[in-house]
Image (cartoon, rainbow, N blue to C red):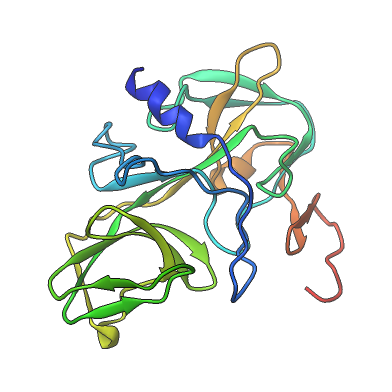
Length: 231
């Protein structure tokens, strides 16, 4: 299996999880067979060393909602770490993790944040407590929402816990890199094979591409749709 195939296999989505404190707005988590499975291992400027590919859009209310209002041609790539080189004709529909009937998969390329413990720290996880010893380093590989992160422990184990980083709690950031996160969706192309499309603000500069609405937790609608009264 080559690098592209191995990365693409990471994007198959697993069932949604719910935390005890709050409902985290995720569509899926990846199964991490090995601690560094999502690391990009420096695949060019789009996925440099020190970044990670996560198979969801981050946050409790991931955005934006893409309202495709007509037949639109966009540029797509063959995988998350390659530049867009192929035209793809989209059909009308809503593109968002909460409207899974359209996009096939979602991904975000993020900088891995590393924090070193200055004292003994116990992470409050959704399982057994995780202990970080002084001078050990943990890595945030993805933000889940409501202050919770996906964290790689010093031994490579993955846990979900309150995001580290507060100096007052015994953390200091190390090996920081400058990288603007990039959201993508793997979309069906009319008359061709699917491709990965970057989803950013520039996308809405195209005709028949509008920003839809988050109507409430887990619910999205087209441009101008009325939000839930309690949202």
